[in-house]
Image 1 (tube, rainbow, N blue to C red):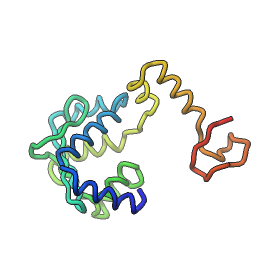
Image 2 (cartoon, one colour; image 1 turned 180 degrees about the horizontal axis):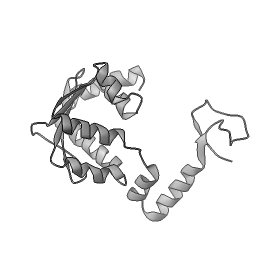
Image 3 (cartoon, rainbow, N blue to C red; image 1 turned 90 degrees about the vertical axis):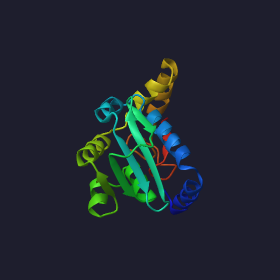
Image 4 (cartoon, rainbow, N blue to C red; image 1 turned 60 degrees about the vertical axis):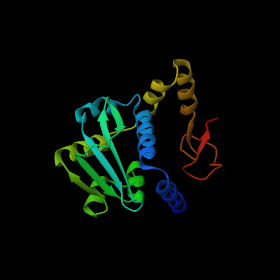
Length: 176
């Protein structure tokens, strides 16, 4: 995220109640998990609680793993992960590796080592499957149409596009 976006997120997160944030984040993650193989594997951590502490806000969001997803929790966490908002955003966007952040002391993991490692390994191995997600959340024909439309998108200037890039590299354009 650009620095100004992080600054705005800081202000919003400082003002919004933590229980509301935890509920919204759990809903968003549970939605993203639909159709993903990881959802079935989360049962390996059923009943475990973990807490994300965003040190620079300050904010603590605690969750329990239940039913192949997350729900907000007020119980004592088995694992607490501490970092800055930027570090959590970088992890979510896969711009940073959790091990790198840990060894740079930008990310701290406290509590049950085995649970923390298991959670980290599950998240590290998660390769998001957009087609399966769309099939899980959209009615059959709409999922098919959406997947077809997405298959026609590709980065501008890619080798299969014989026309010169009309947009900056990394942007998407409709295939002719």
